[in-house]
Amino acid sequence: MGEQIKNTGNEIVSRWRNKMPKFFKWVFGVAAFIGGLAIAINEGMIAAGAQPHEWWLDIYPYLVGTSAGAAFCAKFTQTYPDKESRNTILDKDDN
Image (cartoon, rainbow, N blue to C red):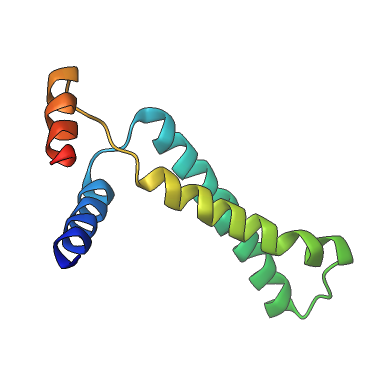
């Protein structure tokens, strides 16, 4: 059990550090931008003492949460150098 947990942890760290495919780089960037923009708008309204509209209060948690989840998932994708290397990596996981 301990070895399996260690292998899973190593896989997580490896995927976090590896290069993302172009599409998922785009997803990560857009999601991070949307979440960051929502946080900046909300904090700006709080700092100015403005009362946000009801629709903003309804959608704000979804903007932040959904974009954070999408960015997090996109970060765990990885690019394989070529098909042969990918098969070698997958074969190691089967053992």
